[in-house]
Length: 96
Image 1 (cartoon, rainbow, N blue to C red):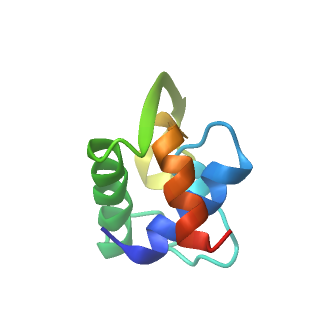
Image 2 (spheres, rainbow, N blue to C red):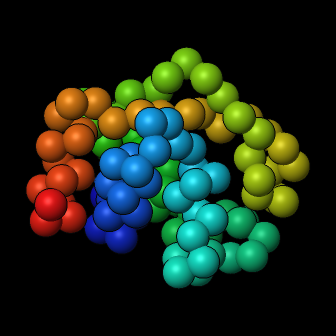
């Protein structure tokens, strides 16, 4: 899993009840391909979401939203939330 993606998920997860890849990639300090195209960073986001889910740190809420990524053309993406285990992990990762 990508460390910078994990930290971004931890930050957003502690700040928001629910989040998607839209929130992870919209931070002005986290530069991504402006087309949000398939690249190493985008693959890192997907792999990190999958890894955290399999570890029980995040859980899919059952909701979906439209991707803001132009290349996805409004395709749906999952909405996630931190679990109790995930909140503890996020706090430890961020030194809180």
